[in-house]
Length: 175
Image (cartoon, rainbow, N blue to C red; front, side):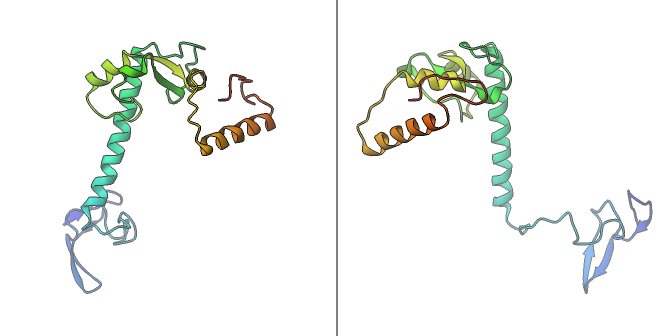
């Protein structure tokens, strides 16, 4: 007999439920405290390990990217080099000093921390606003009709909203 962790009642480790003999040996709670099949069950079939494994990998990857980014940001001083923004790491980005030396983007990198450190050494730490302003100074006129359309659309949208950020008043180039 097993003992329920919630109410202390004893319950059998094997019980017939809906005409089937069920093994309750792994349960921590009796059927009164935790009715069979009412919760603690997965909406997906338990025989599909690929789904659980994929979800586990996605969660692991997200935690690892966050850990790597936090470590690299701390090593680079923890604030924007242009405006000294330091409120959240999610707004801080790595800008390559020389784009030709860039081997990979640090944003989605999951490799070794040593390779990430080596790549971060080629970068400066800037906030998202300053990063966009730096890239807006480098014109990439492709001449493609869709690119020109989007550029004109953005100019009209910025003009319609006052030409500045409503939160901080940022008025840098809108390219």
